[in-house]
Length: 254
Image (cartoon, rainbow, N blue to C red; front, side, top):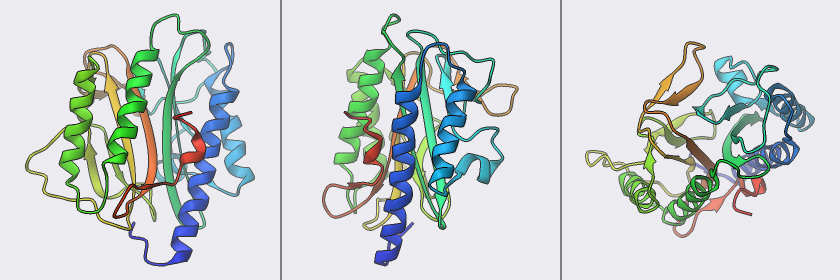
């Protein structure tokens, strides 16, 4: 959305702090032996305590308050009592919500407990690439150039990117223009980032796959060539200089 008055900025800051804090607390709450359903309900209760509503549930009827993807799942993993977290699991939590007509989105991948499967390099690459991408965004910068930066940095780290998942505008709804902030360069995309707009920037860094494909449950996405994928996401306000990271309360870079 385009921020045109102080009340809009306050609204976006408020909901962004809520989803950021919820993500941070969920990450800290996750334990070996816990079901993803329990973790999701914990996050849902935090959102409710702020008076916020789960965005995927409200906007799409998603069967959970947050998307929790484990190991080979790329995104949109459904919380389940049958899915029990184990030592060394690669977990992604994506939290988005609405409060007082404003929407914000953030996510992060992490290794649960000891990194017995060596997922940490993929997690670190995703975090560092997102940070670098965001620091290069300001009003007037081509969206395709940020996609080029993300893919180039992924290749330098020995990884790939998922090409059919993307960041997006956010604010008055969960997905707004610009709707395709991709992790690679599309030369025909002439769109530029606009000052005073809010967008969700997210990395999808992969070991093997380049396309996310849907499972029969209608939600869960996995890679077309297997392997693992990490995602990190922040909602930001674009300026003439470095963006304001509205969801920084998530602590994903700490």
